[in-house]
Length: 575
Image (cartoon, rainbow, N blue to C red):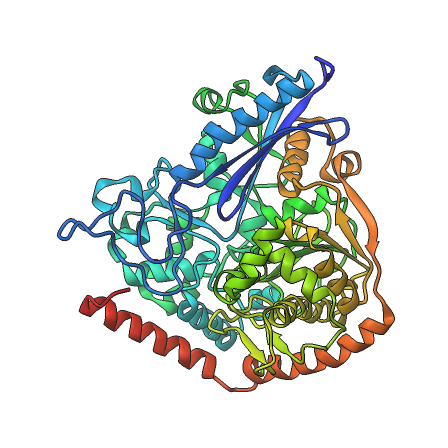
């Protein structure tokens, strides 16, 4: 039983498919209760599956390739379902009461954007826009704005814009400006009705506190806010004259620092969650960046990889450096007083899941079911029996494009070396290795730029795969630590809630008391590392040939695919 006077906090982690809430003890970071709620509408990638139907046909509007939308009401449902569930478990198992909760913190996938009215109402909730795709949330993995990102990058370099180097020389199609430009040019009516272009991380805080505060993390990494300034109206107007006032009309808003309070819990939000009205609501944050304190990684040189459907790499540094292909470097982007660096891989767990669903023979699924294990576990077991290089394959992990260091979501996956002797476990292991090679490219980019990486810490669901973790240690030649909780982002949000409530003076102090990490769980094996050096050399040749060598076959195939899909949809051919 917990002491009735013991202060508690709540952390809520908004992932790609669900939201998770935890009740956490402030003194030591112990999780007392948790709750999960799947988004009712999931991720909409082929058609709008919300309440949207075409007024003329009654058929949900079809979405072009590379779209990924969500319904913001699903996020509020997490507050109504997951938070009470977490409170209920904490009460049943530990005697904890909601009255003990002193703060709530949240984190979100990013860059996930919500177009709203002046009062924060999402545009998809307006009747006239219910069947307009651009009125919905654009999830982080909405990559249809790649042509717009390309234009932004080309113009930034042509004009010598200084801010572009803070993003490794390239901004992503996933971010605020590329997605905003796409919205303007593809649906100017929705763009005109939009009064705020809001990160979901800030929108959910707005729903909790009644106050719209832009968090310093997403504003810096995803919103191109550097040294107190956004890209100029002259730059934006050169992209499109109607885009010149994008910052002043749609984006600009007061900035909240991480760990500060954005406001207090409203009566309405208290009724949703069962939490006390008036408790501190922490400034919003990103799921990856908020995990660093949860993993006890707030010092320079500690790179945290949050490995799930995708991977985000974050670390602090004590100096400003330009790292080619990084997602960004932001003053105070992870903790105040240090430069926060970010990189990432757009597809990791998604790639493994895709292969298991679409590339594995039925006999493997049957064998796994007969043994009472998952197909992932079966493939991992078979792959673990191999020596390094035994499968004769090298893969490129670009099935969702490349976030770092190429920043190009028109790139696609590739497997080289397949023969009639190739088996499912061979391909599976090659895909595991490909994601490790992608991480090594990122680590080496940081090292070469003068931002040393001395420890690699993994959080997220994939750390349960011991083969994958050992591959990462061997490929990167770094000691690999693991977060000692399966609630990393939610715990990180709870840590920020504790700081916002005044329980700790800063995030570093809260992380020291509440963070959970097991150090050097995996160590690199030199024999395997040398074998991986050979495979990595082949990976780099393919990486540079298709990503930097002027071979545009992947982009051309994407274009052919889009045109074919559009032709079929227009003609009414089956999807």
